[in-house]
Image (cartoon, rainbow over all chains, first blue to last red; front, side, top):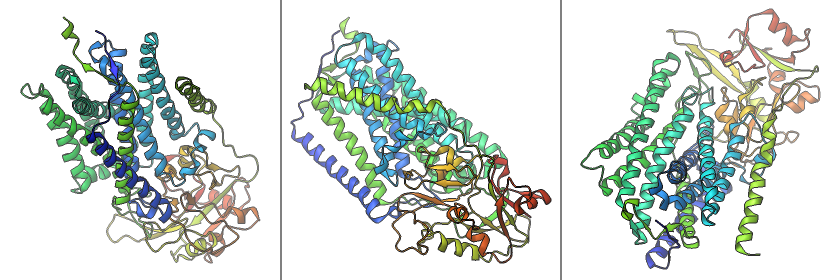
Length: 396
Length: 234
């Protein structure tokens, strides 16, 4: 079956209205970012106790999301699932865009983004950040070469590029998990499981996002999308969620069991605070259990609206997982004198809450809007979308 | 130039930009203290009553970013009050600062090598290189680092550069004083003789004698960071 890729018209009023709304959100986000530098970073929710807030959560969330789209592309190119070939281009394109979004979020979170080139000039081989700077930028580059090979019909390139992209993605997502896993001083960060958890959460959230993007894009452009393709993706999503749930369970049970880490762990799991709810309601109930019930239930697993709903829950649930990944490890005070009580005038020994600020939310939404604008413009400039996405069986 | 060629050229430039600097990731640099001085400190907690004079002297001498909002107020040196969980146990005042580790996590994680260990063992920040990513603050087990959250007016000591908004500052053992043969300002200020500063490589220095004579401990020795601030009576 020959697949014809075409550009979108992009002349409808609805699309211009959508672009205008996204542009306003993006402009607000950029203004909020400007205010952080003009007025000072005290207008963010971070402080000396909690140096990393929402922007870091958004950044690692975007990195994770990009994994799923790449896997979708690899399904046809590397794993021989030819029915997913219509999504090959758009999947790699979304992967690259989300990486750009995460890079924006990281760089605009720096105190001195004007020193952008320094991480490339002065590499520190012992810093996972240094490695990530290299991994992220080359990952975007690999995605672009991969796209180029597909656009120019270099079929012999596609499989090797797909394999390379998968290997790179594992590196990118492991490296992102290692940012936290390597930190010995913080009980809720230090963990060899941080990287695998990150990779699996990336797969589940990315697949879920891809389902949402594909269904809504094909619907908005009036192109035919075979339900069986989405159901095929949803079959992957269920197991991905279970693997994440398994890793999270192992991680928290070990931490709860170990006396030296049980206190911060119970703070998250049973503290009755915001993070307890984000964990149990956001990650476990909404993000894992309900989607699994939907995706494994014969009544709902073949229904596109139910799959969409489950995917939306997973996308939200993994964002909750990212918040749990980043924040409680800083909110729970550092333990300079284990098993002793400590106070000082520098917030030692007390729980300092992270109060997310309007500026950070505006910045995060602005960056997501920029990604969305680039997505729409990309569809208009390049032939990313197939005319129709039919399952292979149609030929028979 | 056609669009195709332009895209191709752009791709090649991007590839070179991404790959070329990464080659330096392949060899690791080593921080070795030469045979010269290696600075360290001994803090005798039996003499400290937590008066805090060293803290205010430090703030003035180092132009520490000071704001009324406690959450963004910076601290290079602070006094912690620590007691055991046993009922009615005595509180102990403990001055805390950068421990100037031999094996510092902040230096390990810095993506631009803005944090580094000088050959004499002092951990410094190149504030003109720091990108303000704050990974070092996340990695430091001692909370020795503070981010400058906004521009702060005035300078209490014109001889020491003031840290600008957007980068990280920390205790530097008053490096410019040490380089001029003076003691760090906290050591000089304390009239009770709580703090001693000197060369750990010199067996006859006061710090070496204190370390070899009594039972000294360092904070979080379990992390194996090779901290160079020792405590007597911890």
